[in-house]
Every structure is written in structure tokens, then in C-alpha cells.
Length: 258
Image (cartoon, rainbow, N blue to C red; front, side, top):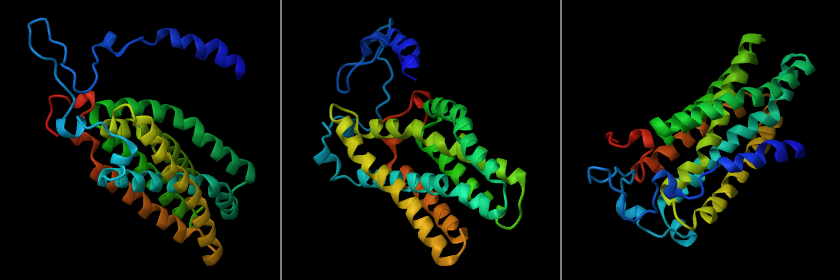
């Protein structure tokens, strides 16, 4: 892995443009560059009053948008890690071979690669909220397949669970940063995102724990999986209410109605 970093990752830095101005980008609040005909370049800012604020952590945490992000992020990793930690045990309890159950967990990470790249790029065209919804829907499909597997052992349902979880669900990582940046872009973005990662970590801790407690209390994963589906729906709602699209539009939406 160290050799890969030296041979592959390090040279990639040579391809990075040195300044935002090299690709026509300017800081918020600065005059936009003009086209050759003298007309102004289109801007992605929808709410200039919000975008013009120098967002610090103390200012951000006093806004409802910040707390919608907290809940949305918490719920996303709740659903993510609840299934990641418990799916192998669940599959073995359902009657699948332990080797196949272990391979299923590994395959989730493999199918996640094209999903993260593809949906991340798609979010630049259709918006972060839509791709976040796709990701949470991936977990909803995953949990629905697991609930069905408890009643019918099916390899088809197993593969549906793997693909939905990895290809769709894991794609939410591609929009975590952009969602925060489009709402709280500025010199303190890193600190604000760092505070929000506490919600991500909290959800990742709560999901497996609550799922395990529920399983031990009921003797089944069914109730725990239904709770996770509800959590996914709440996460979708939170990100749409936070509405990064109402502060800054993605490149593919510039010039289009909200």
C-alpha cells in the first residue's frame, strides 16, 4: 500500500490545478469573470445573503440547517453500520454458508466503487439531495431484502441486498462533503464539517448497538431492520429540508429552475 501511494497517488498531484482561478473559479463575493462578449458568467449562488455570511462554527450551530444535517448524517451512518456489522451473523442464522456470508460482506465494498464514482458524478448534474435519496433508498432496499430473506432463503435476494447496499447505499459518501460545502462554504468549512463528523460517528456507533439490543430482546432482526428503514426515510427528509440546492446549485442545474 505504501508503494501504491508513492507510485500512483503522489504523481496524481501533478495533475491538480494550482489555483481555482486557473479554471475560472473565484471566491464567493468577488466579481465573476466576464465572457468575451462582456457579459457576466453565470453563478451557482441561489441565496446571496446566506452565501455572503462568513460561516463559523458558532454561527453554523445556531441555524436549523446545521441540525437538519446533524440528524440526516446520524441517520445515514446508523443504517450503514447497523447492516454492515450484523449482516454476516444474520445470513449465517438464516442458513447461508459462513463462507458465502463473509464473501457477501466483501462484495458490498467491491460494488460500492462504481456506485460512488457514478453517483458522485451524477450529483453534479441533478443535485446532492437526489443522490442522497438514492443512497438511502439503497439501504431501504437492502433492509427489505434482508427482511424477506428471513422468510425465504434466496440467492437472488442476497445479491439484491449486496448490490443495493454497496452500489447505492455507499454512494452517500460522495455527497457528504459537497452538501456541507454548498451550505457553509468558506474558510471555516473544515471546522464545521469536522463537527458534523461527530454525528456520523455517533450514528455509526448507535446503529449496530441498537440493532443488537433489539435482536437480543426480540430474538429476531426483523424489528431492528424496520427501525433502520424508518431511519433512512428520516435521513432523506432531513437533507431535503436542509436544501443545499437553495444556497448553491450544482453545475448541471445552473440556469435551471429549482
